[in-house]
Image (cartoon, rainbow, N blue to C red):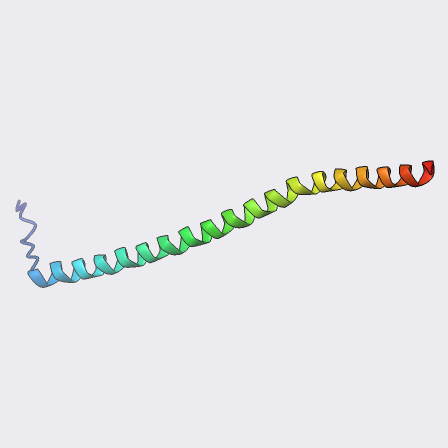
Length: 78
């Protein structure tokens, strides 16, 4: 029984071709990473602005109600 599976020969050209393909994949991955990071930063900015607005509305509403009550009280008591 012959256990010889044959000889495999990988030349410099095959190694170079694979290296070039891998380089292209790394570049594409880096560009994708940059795009995702920019998108994430944009989402974070939007989320922070919504949070600021969400917490500012009750304060503004309370101030408006107190001002209206003060004005009504001042007008009624005159």
